[in-house]
Length: 289
Image (cartoon, rainbow, N blue to C red; front, side):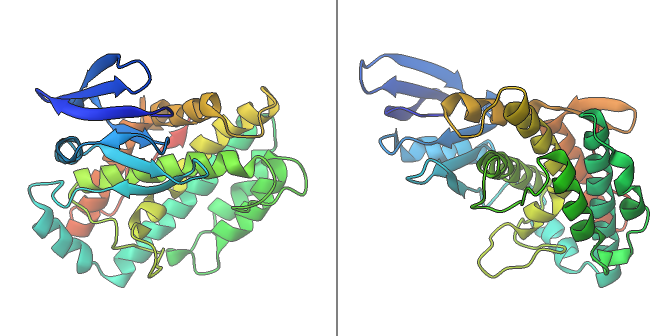
């Protein structure tokens, strides 16, 4: 994350970071980088750096004047079999998409229930919701569960709104980072984030990322819960943003194995491609530990 004026250049496949105030320089191997967040308006980036970051499937997120993530760099060639994968994706049947969405919603509500139990709330109230999700979630169990969930995880009366009261700004930032991570994983699996399963919006370039991130949202909620209640943090600053970025390294249970969230995302997107190909009908999905 770059929160001060720097020059970003490329040398020998290394990201060269030159601080504008004192001309000090540090380097980082690009192959070790997963995400770059450019927040300060006086960060200068060379075209070779952007190309090398794209070649290594690094998510580059640019922030707006309010220091909130606004846009991201996405490679057009993230996988050697992209064209074949796109074909499977575009030709997926309606029942297949409904099955995918059902699994995503079930897992999201289960993780919300697990998180409530983990922080000392009553997660069992969400059991009727995730036990009764229909194909395609036609009766919107997701929305009904969300109303119950938000009223319990935070103060009674809390409303999840983009421009709402704290800790909404913390949630917004965490979800944006998560969304970028999901888009990166989708591209790495050869999938195109613009072809959504449930989310559709002519102004949204990443509806599939919005679909796949749903069961991962509670991992952001957990970090925000502890920031808000344990550390009494309600507004974003650089230190808080750094803590929210740590969601990418959260412990995620995938079956019997616990992995970092960033790796778990790749397993989920790879399983999504297998569903599109007709090789399975089950997604590999995360559980809160």
